[in-house]
Image 1 (tube, rainbow, N blue to C red):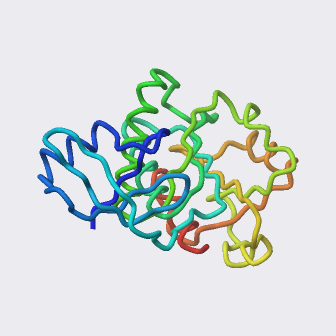
Image 2 (cartoon, rainbow, N blue to C red; image 1 turned 180 degrees about the vertical axis):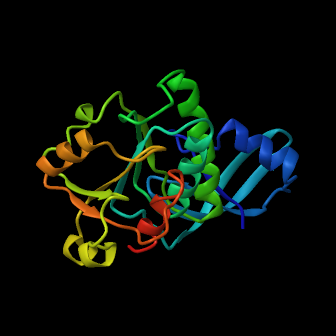
Length: 222
């Protein structure tokens, strides 16, 4: 069944109106799912010409995000779109893009990119039947994140012995800030910074994942 996330006024967004009327060509009284305020409902569409509204019927079981804030070292090109899509599908609560020492890409046109990423995330959340959307943000630097006192997990290819399964049991019911380096990985200066913040450094195993996919094996463990 089709799911739609409503806007801040709990109304159907313009893009979704187009989808309802012109793509799906739904008829009056068609049942869909609508989500707002972190909850989702079975709803009935009221369609009169180009006018579309809805009536809720019953609440649907929620599919809440995990307490994970993904800090992704800014990658090249459209890899930010891949991160936004799959981090949403696998349940991240927040997605943060930040330049790191080895980032090749630079911050530019962030407002335009943010609009695009939010649309991608929304489509991914509807597809995967989540009940809320992750926050997506750009930060200028790691220091601007203010990670002092946070529970930090660093996915580090230089770590060879400490595995995710050893660390996660200690972090139950805790908001986790997981850090993924850009192409080329994490710089030693950044490792030093994370060490001072008492971060947990873990390995994903022998396989080295592309930066845009490295968060997936971590999120699937939770």
